[in-house]
Amino acid sequence: MELTKRLIEKYLKSSKKEKSEIISKYCELTKVKRATAVKRFERYKKRYLFQERDTQKNSKKRRGPKKKYESVHEVILWKCWGLSGCVCAEKLHPMLEVYIEELKKNNRFSLYELSKTEEAKKVSLGTLKRMVNRFPKVSTKKHKGNAFIYQKVPISANFGRYAFEEVGYVEVDFVEHNGGSSAGPFAVTAVYTDLYSQWISRAAGLGKNQRSVEKMDLLAHTKLPVDVLHYHPDNDKTILKVLFEKVKGNNEVKLSRSRPYKKNDNAHVEQ
Image 1 (cartoon, one colour):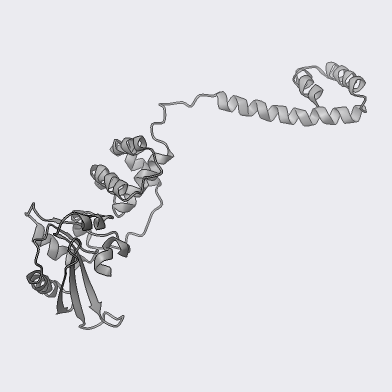
Image 2 (tube, helix red, strand yellow):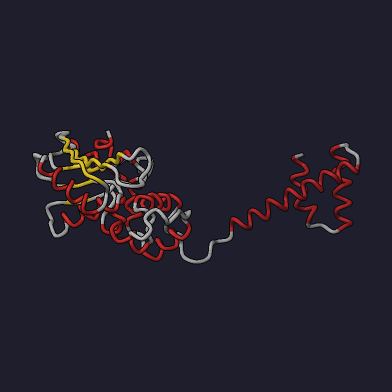
């Protein structure tokens, strides 16, 4: 077989008469029949041509500028895009550094080199647009008609870390007592849980309209012994609107929300 490999290149470049002479010499050296020798050369001919084609393909240089971002950068940006609620690139771009730091604190990038996450922060808006266009599309009906409040309130995926810092970081949840049906009036319990002290403040009301939520919010605050530094509710639009109006213009109090359908983001109050 080694002899076939050595002779194949010369065989392919030879004329018909020269090929016949090579076959004859090969039969004499290997003691095989002429038909067997021809089959061997034909088989090696296909293999040799495929190798030549692959070599030429690999040797061709890619035209255009060198690719700056790899697939790992796309994965990092895809995670940020998911954390943002799958917003467009224009809204995602100015918040990239915030989302990357948030995911790093939550150990979502432990498998990636630090340099890759730092490079992902510097991606241009044009490049980010092209990447977002390639991301798998998701349903846009989750927050239909309420885009404004979701744009104004950022997502925090690791709010539980404040349980070890100081009092004032409060998770908020409104529990419905409707037996599985939201038809007609039903009782609601507002639950405010301070992460550090584990103090729980509750208030009851009827329905989840804005007036009822405002009353429950005021009542729950009368039972809180701490000054609130940061609210963290779920994605209920009425609760978000009430708390947004409360913190608007107050730089000392912050507001964030959990990821849609991720109850573990509000684990303390859910318990």
